[in-house]
Amino acid sequence: MCNRYRMTAKEVDLAVTFGIRPPYEKDEEYPVGDIFPTGKKTPFYGKVIVQDGTERKLERMEWGVPTQVPSARDPSVKLTKYVTNVRNLNSSFWRSMLTTPARRCLVPVTAFSEYGLAPGEDGKKPLHWFDVPSRPVFAFAGIWRPTERANAYGFLTTEPNTIVAPIHPKAMPVILHDEDSDRWLTAPWDDLKDLVAPYPSQLMRVEGLVTADADNARSPVLF
Image (cartoon, rainbow, N blue to C red; front, top):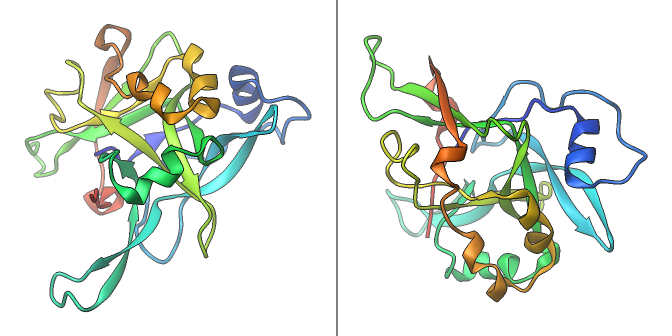
């Protein structure tokens, strides 16, 4: 699963790249640093792009859609989990968001990461960063919904391509081509199945090996 990504583009650049009309918000980097869900009481926010009528808007939402799941110790007790990655597209939990264009969004990204399979010399798994060199900022295919705490979003994952698979063989985020952003925000769900596919590996690169506290990048993939 992808539970850490980076978004260092300024908001004015997001507006230009994704067709958000002026006036732009304050020209600053938001948020600063990596984005990862806490999965706890304190939410972590990112920016998403939604369609509002004929225009696109940049909005602040919490990463991780809450759901109730049985406790492993006592199934009669329900726990709140914050789900960041959308994998089972046939799940009724996601279907209303997937089939409603107004509940789809673009998640702007400048890079995303996955942990390697084997620990390094320090005993920690290395964190590998992926980006798209020809696109300083790109977008994941996202969904969102209102919750009691805040509007919350997640993004779709799919089979990994050949650059991601050796590091993370289970899945990778669904990266949209620029020309598919409008379709994702407006088209019927049945016309979008072809977008849920691995991004071409020849257009990506993996760079840098850093370690991070694994507790900062743990969130469940359910369903």
